[in-house]
Image (cartoon, rainbow, N blue to C red; front, side, top):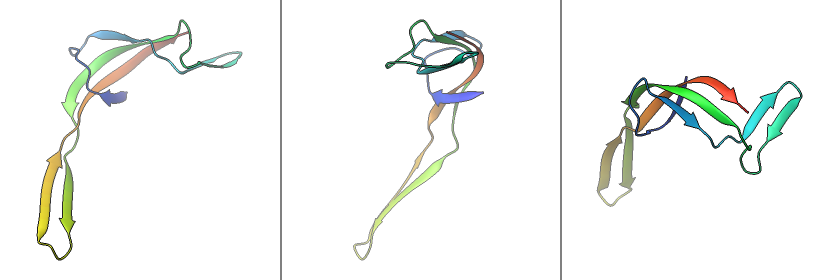
Length: 85
């Protein structure tokens, strides 16, 4: 499973990620400049969700300034099917 920033896709949909930086093969590693030519990752979207809430608290000493804020990052959970390259 792999989590990344939210993508505009439906659950169960198959996607191809074409910007691959590194591929491992039997004869060694292939490093892209900046991306590996012809390589892609095939994945399936498992879930769209929000991460656990974090609290952002700002204050300034002796100034009576306090600000409490929460944040939940949206994410897409992927299952990597295969790496072609």
